[in-house]
Image (tube, rainbow, N blue to C red):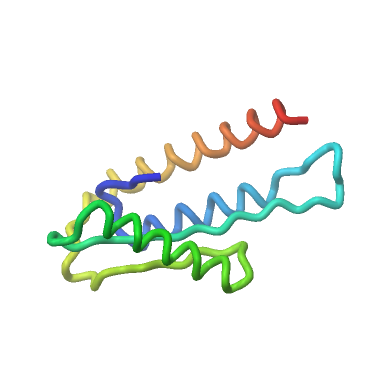
Length: 113
C-alpha cells in the first residue's frame, strides 16, 4: 500500500489499525483460528530510489515478523526531512483507507467461507 503524502506517524497508525481490523475477523469454519497481520512501514529521502524504498519496506516487515508477528515495524527517516500533507488531508486519507480495508476484509472472508 502506498501512502504518498502521509506522515510516518499516520502510516504507522493506519497499518496498526488494519492489524486490529484483521484481528477482529471471525472465521466461521474455524472458531479457534485467530487472524493476525504484520506490517512494515518505510519512508524515503529525496536521493532514494523506488528499489531502495521497497527494500526498506521489506526490511521493516521482516523485523515485524521476527518480533513474533502481529505488529508493525518501521524503517523511518528523521522527521525533519519529511514533507507532510495537511492534517485534514491525512485524516481523510487514513479514514477512507481504513473504511476500504474493512470492507475488503469482510467481502474477501465472506467469499472464502
